[in-house]
Structure formats: C-alpha cells, structure tokens
Length: 237
Image 1: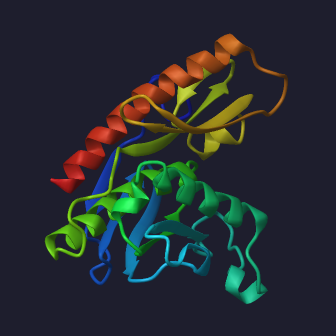
Image 2: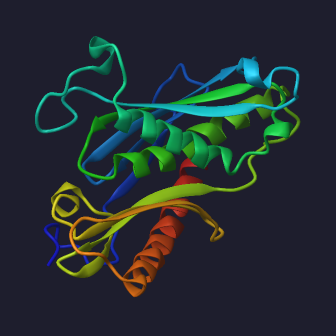
Image 3: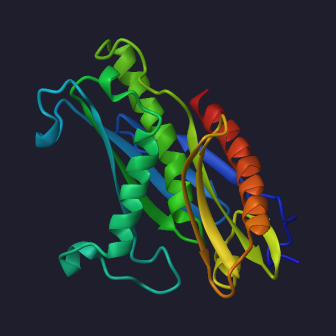
C-alpha cells in the first residue's frame, strides 16, 4: 500500500493555473499533490554572447526553493553567495528539456528565461518545474506570435516530466516525499508526449534494479506524461 493510498499507476492530483504571474510574458502555477511550483517566462531581445550574430534563439532556466518550502527552513542561496550543485543541476536539466522541443532558428535572436520557484515541496519538484515551464514557455511564445515578433511558434513538440520508482519492491508512478525517501530505486523521466525520450535520471538507492524493472518504470512514466500532456493542453486552452 502506498502511503497516499494511490494505485501504483496513479498520479497525484494535478492542476495548472496559467497567468499566475501577471507581469511575466507567460506563467503558470503547477500543483502536483502538495508540491507547488511557480513558473514564469521572461522574454529578452538578445542572446548570450556565444550566440550573437548566428540567428539562433536561446531558452534557459533558473530554479530555486523558497526557505520554507520544506519541513525545515533552508538558507537562501543568495545569502550564501552561491548556488548549490543541486540547484545548478536542476536548472540545467530544465533548460535542456525545453530546448529539446524548440526550433531555435525560428526564434531569431531572442532569449526566453524560465524562472521556476518552488513554493511547497513534497517530492517531484524538478519534474513539476519542467512540466509547468513548458506551459509558461508556450504562453510566452504565443504572445510573441500575436505581436508578430515571430512568424510562428517555434515549438516543435510538447515535453513533460514525472518521477517513478520502486516502493516496497513495486514500480510506482509519481513519488511523493514519503515514497521518494524510502524508495529502493527512483528515476526522473523527461519525455515528449509523442513518445520521445529527452532525459532519464535513474538511481538504485539500495540494491541494483533489473532491466525488467526499469522497463516497468518507463511504461509508467509514459502513462504519466500522457496524462500531464492533457493537463498542459487544457491550461493553454
């Protein structure tokens, strides 16, 4: 029995509220169970120096957790003067995931930065951030298209992410904190809604797991991403 009482193939309750950050070009608040992440897109008419005069756009991300998004207060990274390795790894993952479904040549020399801020954490913050960031990005690009800054949306696909793991020996979908902290193995699956694999992060927390168990986790991830994709499309109207 899962701590939440969910079936092995059941997601937590999902909601995506678009337009949550009123000043951003695109934004949403994504709730995955008790995990909440605010995703906001900012558009700038320039690109990093290494991309200048190449006609290519850029999509990047920043990620952070509010001090009381967890059970105990965490220090603000700005107060420490540097980002943790975990923060840097997650924001690079978000950026890679979004760039995988963008035709950067169709953007022109424009940068879209996705700020993903965790308000409440209960497992799966990076996967929720990727799923919500795609919605914020799509909304920002829609605004650019409406303003005729770009001719058409450069989105080439739809990407979302979900965690899966082995809990008490059973493959389960969408781990919350109670499951993640006790999982025998856990993984984050970044997939496109048409079946493409963008990135997989999978780790044995105790004994090694088998290829058959990994295949079971991937099957669950595909089910989860399909359902998340429906939520993303609904948020875009």
